[in-house]
Length: 229
Image (tube, rainbow, N blue to C red):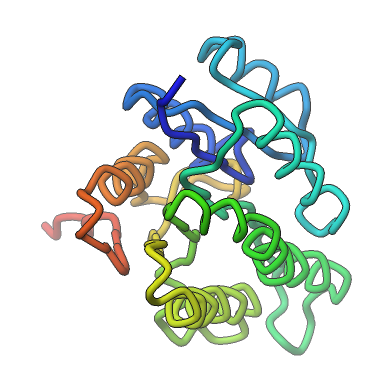
């Protein structure tokens, strides 16, 4: 089989799951990684088990990330694109009162986990001259009072810029996907105006399906503001 292979972290729900569905329609074989094995199996059953590999992966774990890449190469022999999408939100309270353990988990997931994904996937992407995509955020382009989450997404933007320069001349394309508010389980309460996960998935697929000489550096996508009376 010669169909390209896309690896997605944080693939069990929300943006990751919708991107898997959209990429499957484009003919991609998929490696879906997340902590929730049950949700991954449900998604695999939906998409067709012969073209999908699922891997339980906590992106904070160096061993899990290595095993994820090893499983992808064992199953398909190559990785053509990686969507470093796993992330989590913070806790209320601002810098003065937030739960510091929630901070720790978020920082390790949103920054350290992304770094591990990049490092472990890089050899395969260099081999395929593939495509690296990272889930940033509109929150990584704005000053949000008291938001450690915003700070982690600023860091993801910096990782994206830095790895693009590191990989210049390798043939690997690097794209930052930066959504505004998205209606996903990420939030306890549904936002008043929000993107749908499939809106972000469409941005990912747009980037992936450009010809090799086109490098889409960033896509910032926000919900349309409500119409004023």
